[in-house]
Amino acid sequence: MNDSVARFAPYAFALLRIVVGVLFAMHGSQKLFGVPGDKPPMELASLIGVAGIIEFVGAY
Image 1 (cartoon, rainbow, N blue to C red):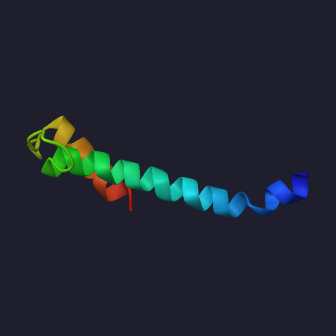
Image 2 (cartoon, rainbow, N blue to C red):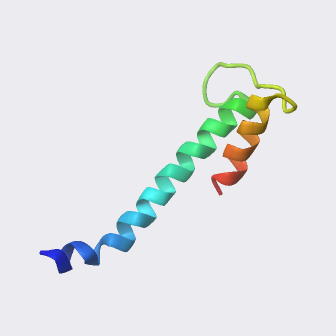
């Protein structure tokens, strides 16, 4: 049983990394550009704006 689970571990880690990256990118783009959603974009010089830059760039 352990060998069959270990065989799929690289695929599971890749899928997890892709999903988390997309979530970070979407969260950062909402802060920077207001997309997706209807919130207005934040100022880049604010602390939330810097967090949005880190989230958006760090997701890739």
